[in-house]
Length: 169
Length: 216
Image (cartoon, rainbow over all chains, first blue to last red; front, side, top):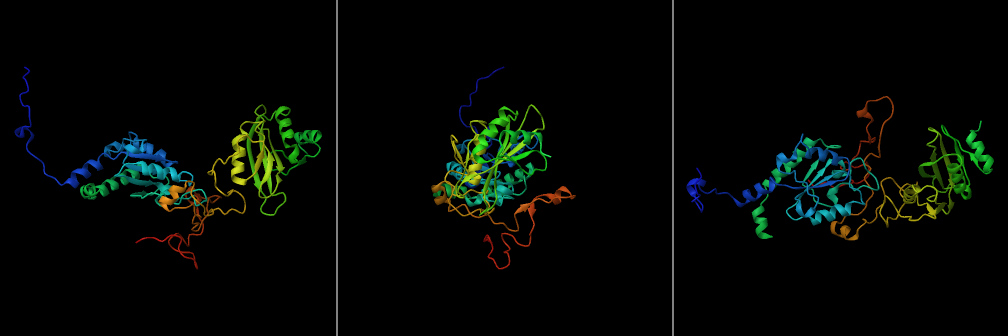
């Protein structure tokens, strides 16, 4: 039998009361679990990045499966591959276009340090043009290594004084 | 014993000389005849595919300084392959060669790459721009006088350079260059690596300052 819903407003008997938390905890909880990546796939590391997005490694378990190809909609740039000097200004430009708060993972040897490309054409580490939060070793890194980097980044975000930054911004 | 193809070429173009080669026939051609020779090879000898177009830098002061090399393949006769070489004209700073885009449209990008890396100007090329390095890059990286690590110069975009304070710098060699080992060794040992591991970015070479200051 269908009865009409007579409870029009908030019913504390049903909902069980109010949860008290710190603003930082709430904001960081939201940020850590919906970190949308900007896939900056520049070389072979991007293949491993795709594997991370696939079913076997499944980055969506960590709330980061929504690869956004628009920097306006993404939170975390994953620099996957060799950054050449020709590409470096574009990487910086896309980083500048991302809305704050934003983070960067340097995936693999090339993005972290230039890797084996000690040459005239290769930027010797993407940290020379954008601030990097987490470096991942490997050439290319295993998908698990990138997941580990994401978890490390999430742990870092959980420690951030987000509420203070929002109020002072 | 001269190859039949080389004999046929020399019958048609007497100035052609045979070029030392370990496998396939190869010939030296004077630069003013190169387009005619390539057209003859394409139309009358069946070498319809331009496999590669590259150049050799014989080092500073050498004469000729640059040689362009054309690799041709006949798809009708599998395995028949010929290399044609011609010494460039022009100066050391700006060597020249005729463009063969009219013979093989695919030569377009090969000639752009050759121009980018060696600075060889291909006369008659429809769009001779750099293809790998950015427009405005001041050097030609595959020339012998250019160091592998590079030369300090500006980033391609001025406002990004101003914003980041980063320039194109000579890469730290740190025991490099990274080279692969050959011979009967396992694959892990054969991987490219710096051969002189006694110094790195952090630990300086004797008598030098460290390449990178590490913040503790």
